[in-house]
Length: 323
Ligand SMILES: NC(=O)c1ccc[n+]([C@@H]2O[C@H](COP(=O)([O-])OP(=O)(O)OC[C@H]3O[C@@H](n4cnc5c(N)ncnc54)[C@H](O)[C@@H]3O)[C@@H](O)[C@H]2O)c1
Image 1 (cartoon, rainbow, N blue to C red):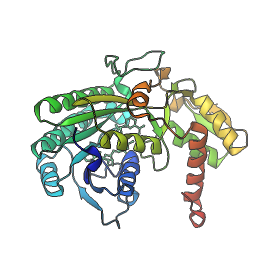
Image 2: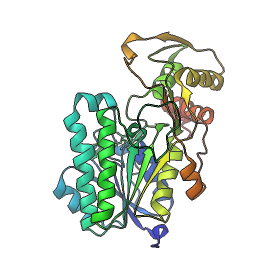
Image 3: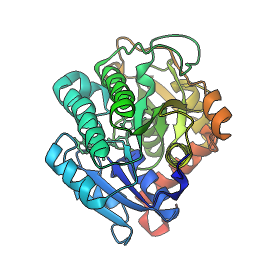
Image 4: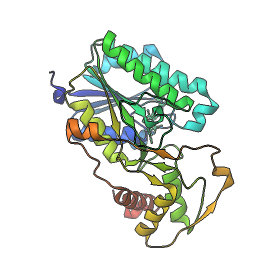
């Protein structure tokens, strides 16, 4: 087994985004040199510690083969993580060509460049959106049955990883990430909406309240991705769910926010935010991560919401900034 824990240089495609900046700072803390490749469509330079001598930042599009190959050759990573994607589902529905170009063609270009450069391992950020609709927590063995363009692009991304492990001698690991929340979220999701409205007043205007999701704190996702990157794998292609194994409805999230804030919040249905169809459950089985690595998420939803509310509050009052 090669020494994954000896990786000294890691390329993070999409490293300036919400998950990316948390992962990059974790890798830098571990003493790893990090090369971020990002087009800054949603990610931001200021999310990264540009003063770090161990961090290199390159602007580029993952579907641009020459630029990706040049970056990989020049930076010379031992391993890579693919986070770059069009992730906001309404945007994927509005512009499926952009979603396919980024999530499918871009993933292909990066995998091919990594294979060509003799990189040893690639971790790919997939999504819970590859799963079909069902009431029970999802298992990695379940056949994918995506219900939207975004989920379809992630299924193809996973298959490209499987193919790269067969044909380019790359070891590839797929992380199926569930609903992530935490500081510096880039895409409009329900938890940042609840937090910003709750900080502004007691009345929340929200869409569907019943659908339950498996919300995982971004620091737990960064830990899990680092673990998948740095741990030896028993196979050349592996798939892991990264979630908490617990799901909460939007209504329950609001109730937890009430507890954290110590005040009552009132909900007013907002027809503009209602989705016509929404799956009622989306929850992970995390037995495989527990079995293989003894990994479990450390931040529960109440603690995660407390941290997020404090962080948002500190952003609004910069002189009291705390992390
Ligand atoms: N946030 C979640 O809840 C969640 C859940 C499941 C899966 N994921 C997946 O995790 C990954 C990271 O998600 P995120 O929430 O950090 O989103 P994000 O939008 O913050 O991160 C994506 C990053 O990729 C960059 N990017 C986008 N298109 C690019 C392109 N063509 N070339 C180069 N860079 C490009 C963006 O600028 C951004 O920095 C994505 O692959 C996403 O699909 C996220």
